[in-house]
Amino acid sequence: MLLRSLLLSSCLMSVTVGHGDIIEVHGSGTTNPSKCYWHIMDSIMDRVKLPTRMTYRAVGSSTGIKEFMGKQEDGYKQLNHFGSGDIPLDAEEYAAISAIDSGMLHLPVVLGAISLFHSIPNVPSGSAGLNMTSCTLARIFKRDITDWLHPDIKAQNPQLETLIGEDSYPIKVARRVLGSSSTSSVTKYLNTGCPEHWPADMVSKELGDKWHPDTLPCEGSGGMTDCIRQTPGTIGYIDAGHGHSQNLVEIELKNKDGNFISSLQSDDRGGIGYAAEASDFLPADADRDFSKVELLNQAGANTWPIVAMSYIYVRKDWTKYGDEFGPDEQALLMGFLEALYEPTYIDECKELFGFTPAYTNEKLKTLAKNGLQQIIMNETAIKYVFESK
Image (cartoon, rainbow, N blue to C red; front, side, top):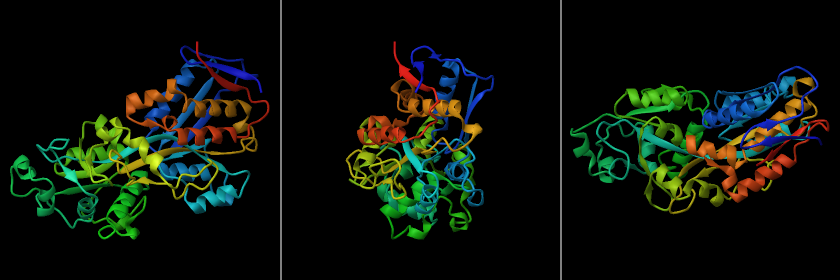
């Protein structure tokens, strides 16, 4: 296979393509690592000496999966070159894709904390602020507890009444609308940690009318930020990197080992990545069924209890999709996928957006690298090779 060389520190050197068309690659899915994807795509387009256009639509994990799968009546012809989500395809979706062509891959890219934030006036982040257990949270989100100075909350937070300065303060609950991987992670966490208050039928990426009618519907990460910020006394969930970038006030959660911890403390102590290390359900190969993978309530003194893993979804055989995904497009997509595991590119996502790159965990790095090797490309595709000066 011919090679295009990618100089990480300066520019992309390349042979010219044999036509004047723009080489395009398009993906869609989860909002959580979208800024990371855009940053890497911009870096590649800035450096490559070819007419290229790369896009990623941050429309949510559920939409990303739907567009990656396509419709059954169309033979599951995918509507994008790749999808992305913070949840794996479920067993039925995986089976449908595996039954055609040569199957698909789940490529782990980044790990991120999903966290709880609030807007109670005068209550700070940290141990002097708000501490919560999964059962207390479950009762709040079910609206069994509707006041921040409920005796059970005060028992965990004796300083709260002094901080609030009132005898009562109503709780507002913000939750995502439409299919959301954050909703999936949070509802699974509540069920795993407190099934007596959050039953299995309340676990879903979209609860619809199962939510209490007085909860606040919020669309996307930006909408959740607005819901929390604009209504004092609101509690909601969002990926931790986004919440911290918006200066929201985080709640410390009690993890499986019984320690109250913030997502920032957990990340500093390696507790985000350790959630993957501690998981018993991670498959050995990227082309297997990932539907049982979850990184919730894992053991470890510093482990964050709600960790989401963002995946890239791709088909294994890229040679069957016609001119719209020819050798040049295949090479560009492979260059993007490989950049997700190159420190020069992906480390900036941690620095800028707070994600833990999958390559920092040997188990996930091996899984992804082996997965990339399973991809079947056109023999005339001119592959990019990463080099350093």
